Image (cartoon, rainbow, N blue to C red):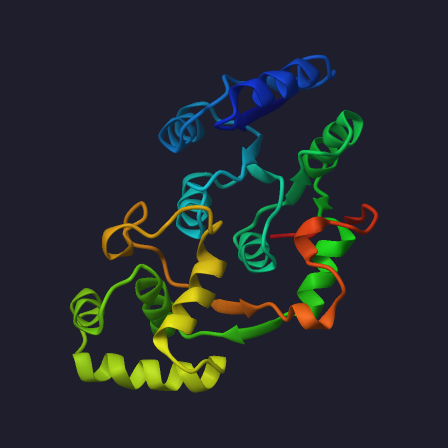
Length: 247
């Protein structure tokens, strides 16, 4: 029996999917979560085999990183309307096993969950193709931390205090990152960081604080939309599943 946990902040949509999944032989549906706090609690105490997670604005790189540490054997599928190439790439790096469009027919929604539970991956061709068109910039641990803090809106002095380094060292790191990433200023670098860290659906609050400090990125993915006719988030190409991958 596959224990499935659904997280969504859209109760009517969640109820519709619940009614479908309850009719699938071999599926056991746990109580649906409507908040990130409830999701974390269920992950700790409910022991789901598979999590179907609505990509709400609260689901960031930081949340996915925390989930990775909380659960070892549980498989995650993101349930999306759209997702940026950048965040999709980061999610895959954190072990997300599938990205499922909400608009797909119900039989394909069920098929996705069955295949992921069987050990396969589920990503559409348009999305995987977008990874080939993007440029990946590897970051050191310190560079990743700095980009994350910069994306939260912290100034050089605040970044230096957080990382326990001098403000001059922060300036040196930023100068090197500008050249490495190919940006002209801290604002452009912060925008790239936000695309890799968040859904982009929420404005940055005071000093950019979002659910606490963000973990450092291991790389930045820089999308190059000019290389293709349509944005990858439209998932225009036919469905393609990916062969199983071991972690």
